[in-house]
Every structure is written in C-alpha cells, then in structure tokens.
Amino acid sequence: MAMQDLTGGPVRGHLLRMSGFMLVTMIVQTLYGIVDLLWVGRLGAEAVAAVALGSNLMMVVMSAGQVLSVGAAALVAQAMGRKDLPAVRALFNQALLLALLLGGLFGLLFFLGRRYYADTLAGDRHTAGLVVEFLNGFVPSLALQIPSMVLSAALRGVGNVRISTLTQIGTVLLNIVLAPILIFGWGTGVPLGVGGAGLATLVAVAIGFAVMLTQVLRSGQFFGRDPGAWKPRAALWKRMVGIGLPSGLEFGLMGLYLVSVMALLRAFGPQPQAAFGIGMRILQMGMMPSLAISFATAAIVGQNFGARRQDRVVEAWWLALQWCLGGCLIFVIAFHLLPEALFRPFTDDAAVIAYGADFLRWISWNLLASGVVFACSGLFSGLGNTRPSLISSAIRITLILLPATLLSRHSDFAPGWIWRLSVAATILQAALNLLFLRARLRAFSSAAALG
Image (cartoon, rainbow, N blue to C red):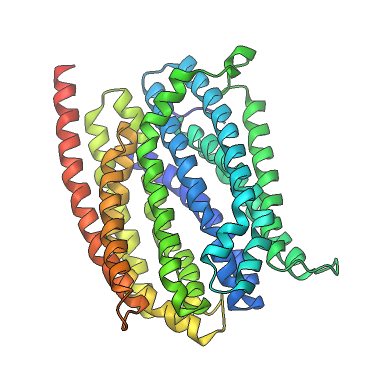
C-alpha cells in the first residue's frame, strides 16, 4: 500500500504497470453493466431499454465525480512530485469529505426525480415503470460511486492502483452472484426483475467502498489523523474543482449526448434504444485500453510535471499515443467482422441485433480518433489543465446532436444518420486535441526554461 515515486525509473515500466491495473479496473467496472444486461436480456427488449435508460444516469454521476477525481489526482500527483507528503494527506482528507457530501446530494436528487426521468424518456408506459423499478436500487449505488471514484483517483495520484483494482474485482464477483439471485429469485423464490439488478449493484458497490476505505484507513499512510484534517478547507476544494470542472463538464456533455440520442431513437420504439444501450456497453470495452492508459498517463505526467521533468512528460505522452492506437485497432477489426456475434449474448431479438450491428460497424471508426483523444486527455489532466478536452468534446457533441435533431424532422430519418455524424465529429475532435496539445507543450517548455 506504499506510495509510488513515478519521477524515477523507466517511464514505459510505470505506464505498463499502472495502465495494466487500470485496465483490470475498467474491465470490472464495465462488467457491472454487462452482467445486468446479460441477465435482464432474458426479460425482453423493454427491460433492456429500461436498464439502459436508468444506467445513463451513471454518466451524470461520473461527471460530478470526475470534477473531484481529476482535480484530486492532479494535485496529489503534483504534490508527490514535489515530495510534499503533508499536502498529499491533506488532499486525501478534503477530497473524500467533499465527495461524500456531493454523493449524498446527487443520490437524493435522483431518487426524487426518478419517475419524471422515466416518463420523459421511455418509449412506452411499461418501459417507464421498469425504469423506476431499476432506479429504486440503482440510484443509492450512484451516491456511493462519487466517493469511490475520488478515493481511487487520489490513490492513483500517489502511484497506488492495487487497492482499488482488487476492490473492484471483489465487488464485480459479488454482483455476478447476486444479480441472478435477485432478478430471477434463484434460491429465494422471490424474483425482483429489473429491480433486482439495481439492488445487486447497490449491495456490491456498498460493500466494495466499505472494504476499500477500511484498507486505506488501516494503512495509516494516506489520511491525516488529526481531527482537524476533516474540517472543510475551502481553498483546497476550490483548487480541486477548478482543475476538474472542465473534465466534469465533459462527462456531463457525454451524459447529455446519451440521453439525447435515446430521445431521438424514441420514435423508433424500444428495439433501437435497447441496441444503443447494449452497443454503448460493447463500445466501452473497445475504449477501455485507451481509457486505462489515459488515467495512468495523467498520474505519471502529474508527478513529473511537479518535479519539472519535461522529458519524461513528453515520453509518457508518446508511449500513451502509440499504445492507445494499437489497442483501438484490434476493436475496429472486431466490430466490423463480428458485430452480430457481439450482440447475441445480450439478446435474441433480431431487430435489436440488426440495429446494433449497424451501430457497431459505423461507430468503430470512432475508435482510432478516440485513442488520440484519450492520449491527449491524459496529458492535459496531469498538467492540471483540462479545458482543451472540454472545448473539443463540446464541439464534437454539438456537431452530432444539432444536425441530428434537425434531420430527425425528415421523413427518411434513421438511426444510422446519427452514427455517420458521430464519425465525422470525432475525427475533428482528435485534430483539435492535437492542436491544443502542441500549444500546451510549448507553454510548458517555455515555463521550464524560465524556471
């Protein structure tokens, strides 16, 4: 459970170790949604659409958690690079305190608004009722996701990814066991349907967070023991939020994108909504290697930025770019050759599979451009400046949703039109990120020369 100095030793080795642990974490996090869909898929297309709609609220929670996670990870990493351990401990205390407060607030708001959300976006009344059933258990789990995310990010800032990875593995295994028991009533005789899927996630997340927090507190290395360390410090909160807010807004825009696409698909019934929900889970698998590399890059860049090691910052980014593109290429090929096979484990509905295969074939072209975006995002996060990522993401989503909304009025409008717009917009986003990165590295180089 020791802190890890990332300013010495081979950059390649640090990136490989951390991204490997992070990839395992990404896989098990994605398995939460996949396990639910695998079991819920047996209940019909309406149930799948309900879980997909309910799960979209995760993006809103992640946007809030990302604000604190990115800010905490960047400041913790930079403090580690400066070898300022008292600052590291203060950041751990303040980040977790703020995360607990924010998680409670979001959980309350979502629980009170769950029925309005379901009635607004579901394709029919039956699906809306299933959304509410799922959210009854799922929403409380979302409240715990923010402190879980922030604690994991702070650990990542000190180079420790082992605790959160092992915790995630344990919680997913628990969810795999609980999901069929609660959904179908195996062994209990009390089937809860989609509500059981939400409840299984809640139990698993709650136990996982409790175990991770206990392990971190027991180590005695990461938190200040003085009771005053838990007193709110507005200055630190402001710094964390200032760094992480653009990244959080970027995740919020992604949540808006998911909800908006679901709304655009509503006119076509639950089948394309279900296909989009499943397709996004599969797409997440294709993006996981790049996302893991991005998170690891942010920690390495942050520590070396704090230590003023520009050469290691640049080396980390180049390695991240190469590895992201290599990982994405594998999934581009898989999505083109095996789209129907990737959907069949989730549903036997022919219409859902047909819509989903078309989605994967088109959206696969996004992956290479997304690999560039993730590599750049890791560097921006480590430097403590996430505004470029927000700007390029906002442009991408605008160039998808605005034309798609206008085209939806056309009598020939089809879901495939949205996927084509997404490909073009994501390529533009990658180009913008490269331009922003070039300017940021020049500024860093000039500052280092002056310092």
